[in-house]
Length: 258
Image (cartoon, rainbow, N blue to C red; front, side, top):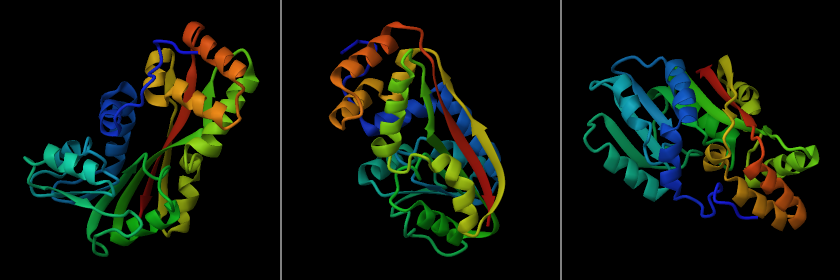
């Protein structure tokens, strides 16, 4: 089934990240993360996996002109976009780098953050150990990640919802359960976990949910992977497009101290 309520073409990755950053969902959880960082003027803060730099201006405002904000990302296009976006902010330095081997000295940062990054990296535990390495004693790390195992999209046939979520956690996202694993992984990396703050956005409009979740595109991949039959996928998408819609997923913000 194809419906105009669904995006049929994947959005440009940079455009997608920018769009999410200014959405109601993005503004809510990012404000929670910024408050948890408790940034003080003049500090050095690193945004691990900064992408196109959507959050760097707000972080620069928090550190002030005497502070330093470092953005690190492995994607050259994203790094170039972030550098261009923050060219007027003299305290911002964007670097190409691997989160598994950060281009930063030991104990060189007061604050660090990751925002929906650990769900994609090859080794989240190594990334957390690197974050701990670059933090000064007492420095704070704030992590924001979803747990896709909590994803629920209401449908009269609960088995279809289960199949969809199972595909997302099995294949669509590399580290799909990372949100609820963060406290354990942070503690195992030598960090002291100070707070776990769950946020559960509620989507009641299918178009808004699709712009975040890519419902039709993910369903097509689930069919190809054998999680849905074509008929099941049609029933699933038809109800989502025409029935009363509700979807939720839990996002975890974890604060830890070096």
